[in-house]
Length: 386
Image 1: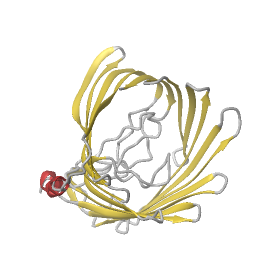
Image 2 (image 1 turned 30 degrees about the vertical axis):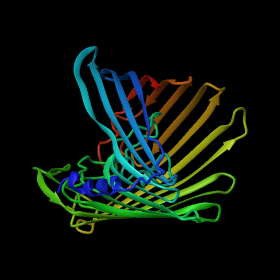
Image 3 (image 1 turned 45 degrees about the vertical axis):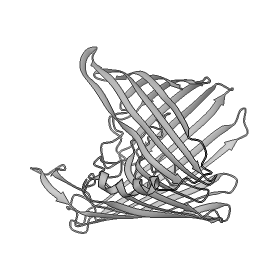
């Protein structure tokens, strides 16, 4: 079953809505973003990277009877990068792929989205147990992430509670917390409910998927093997303002019939808080602590990971902003340091980023996000929005 057959009936349903005589004129908009960067990683070898990215987007909207909207959102991700090792050409990385391709039917209290889209939720910022469908790196000032092919429905109650239901199919990429990618022919499904509680909100989420690969190999294994198992995870998160903002995210994951190298049960916990001090232009301090534990019932292995992260952000007038992020890995005594200076014009943004990190980010199960700011070095970047 391919993703075309999966979303096809939904697209037919969206286009079958009768516009009626009071339909509003169509609205079409074209926009985009042009990005250029240059950076250097300094270590035993000097690695220089140059590149550019173009993200054109086409947006269409039609309103029915002033209540129901039909949107179409299509954007592409075209990029090209060149890597030099000790000033000698190493490789180039051209690419062109869809970035977003979705249809949306919505009103004041519901929406249905079908296609390649971004699905993101939760309360945490730097260390996110609920990063199930996106791969946003908090150090990336553009917050770019690949989408997933999905059908998503959301309903908003008048009490400010809302409910989500989703189904995914045809996604083969491995995401940050995943040991293995989802089997492309297997559907992934789940849902979420958010409830107002006191002066904040509480969320409960669930997702089921079937990971697998024909090329499974972990340290200590002599050869590759085929692996299939099921994964169920439940998440609970909440966020409140009690002077400072406070939040938590907790995820319990069960990997059923997984190989002994993958924990049968996993726990992810994030505790965080932030506050903006009335100093100068306003200094924002954000801090989170992350705890992970995994237990294998077959081998009896128990593993833990502990991270603390903090960020400082300060506006240097109307056009400039400076931010600092620091991560501490308590198990391997590692430090991750990142500084970003930003200057903002009407459509143009300029960034200077300095970093000093280990060669790989040991927080995630997969190798994603390991090379973005690995080692020590700098990156300059310019973005233009039109």
